[in-house]
Image (tube, rainbow, N blue to C red; front, side):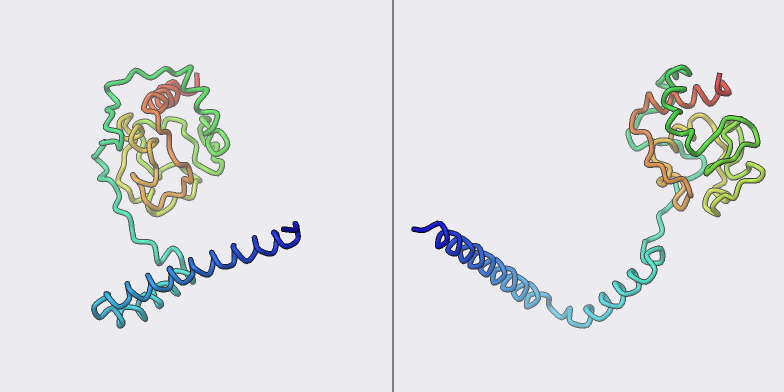
Length: 185
């Protein structure tokens, strides 16, 4: 068989295969919709919800429930008290925080100054514009609460402006807290 003819057969084979897949998907869709048992009325509502989500994604997202201000349970189950933080290691880990935060009092960047954060009420740094979620969280930053927050900030304060995914390593979180408590020394 010539190379040109093999190419044509190859394309036809691919087209036939795509056609079979499309038929199978259409059949599966028809079968599932036939088994829906009266879901026809839900379709317009779903379409309307999708249109709303496209127009305003924030309105479509379900409101996450904040962790209680006095709750310090972590996702990984590690307790802050079970670790000893190393401020020198925390200084190295804190380098990723410096793009948004400073340890000098009154120096706000994208995020607020973290000078004296342990023992301070959330949302209280003068001159920084906090999200309502952070400002109204009722949190006082204890080492334990900061440990929980650094694991996954959005879990602890849904709606916070902090766009940081968190530190998965419990030891890294403890080291950063030791560094914060040292005042950057």
